[in-house]
Image (cartoon, helix red, strand yellow):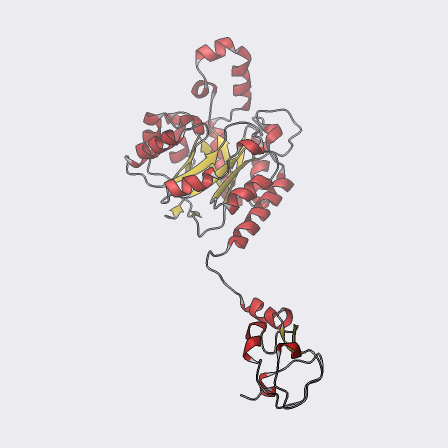
Length: 344
């Protein structure tokens, strides 16, 4: 599998620890200072990147929708962040050492993220997976792409990837995603991560987690997820778009630490016995022991022998090799019989 190197030098792939993205969405409530504090807290919680949403009222919904849902436009405008503020946040992220990215919803927003914010990658929302002209436009920027696959059937995922590849851009990371907010555990189908890894072995695979809590992300890492994206907030008790399903800084810290521990624990498919375990054999395995007092010259039978710890004598699997052999020393009951005690 290819290792994808983001524009800031971060690497994503099987040989790397999971890459954690704090999905800020609109939990900043349109406040730049709150957004900056979220960036700071995400970094302290172990995240590599904070991801915003670049939408505006004009790029998200049609006039027809707003006419039927007049309050929606006010809500979208309230929670949107202006381009200038996004750039300010991007610069702040650079200062504190955490990556900044965003999800654009029109070509102008794509250009802004690439040219003005120098985003290390562009996140493509699940809703765009069949928006082929838009996929081509983003892919031609020759920037790493993270594509969420929520709501998409298998053939739609294949088609979107083909569209992107035809532009010559192979810098692609795929996220398994269930586009329900929040999503119940029984709807997640984490094994889809395995399908994506088998179907597209050349690309890193991740998980966009819309469940409550932190444990499902650990399961994704156990299945090989290279990226974990999780909604993030400073206070999930406040009302807001998707805010109540987000996790707070302490929970995010637990998520990142637990996922890293799971990644480390995965180790190798090869059967490996460590030096520490070889040493442990001496304490925990059994050796051949005298079942009773045995005199020098005794020809050993199975009835003369028993197996007990420690494993520093003749090992249990060698017991048959001493039966029928003559002792050259007296052995007290319950003492180890050593190779030096047997006539060879």
